[in-house]
Picture (cartoon, helix red, strand yellow):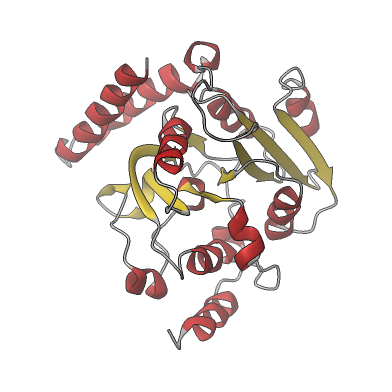
Length: 278
């Protein structure tokens, strides 16, 4: 199953790279079909964690959410669909006023999923709360409006098990919105480029949990762009590993993204001032 899944991911990646740019409807149809097959049937895609070098749960998945009852189910199912099954998912509900709790109740039979409702304090604090109760040796992130591809965690866990010197890694993001004409965001790691602007999606980023103790969690004083700041801190001592796997489908389905609602200028200036001496 793993080899077949790898071939499918590689074939899909190649098809995206080779598609004529004026064939937008056909590309959208292929993507929709692939996501339907891979994300809506987790019971067929999950496999055991035999041979896993990490204590259980190996991976903590951090998912903050706020008023996304109509989207979060797909995000959770994409975690359940991972071929690597030894994970815990911590869903921190940041004061939702819709029926998010009702949607999450449908996942109560999966003991790997923890639903933690809290007052509304913002995405940054919600992520930090999840980090404070995380048990996994590895920590990954998934926003509640995005979906993972099923081979992501298995590839990441294999990497960290085989290469103990690697502390953090990132995979490929499929997106329609970040750069005109480019659907794959998967650039080689470049520290100088990262200092200029972030090119690593948080939902593609995974790291060893001990980095939290070494470099701290998310900076709640920022209010936005805290993902860029954290990735800068976690890669200051060593580069992130560029993991050749389809990690996440970045979706824009509502107007509640932090990048669309938060004021970014202050956070941008603060982060640049913090790192300008490097």
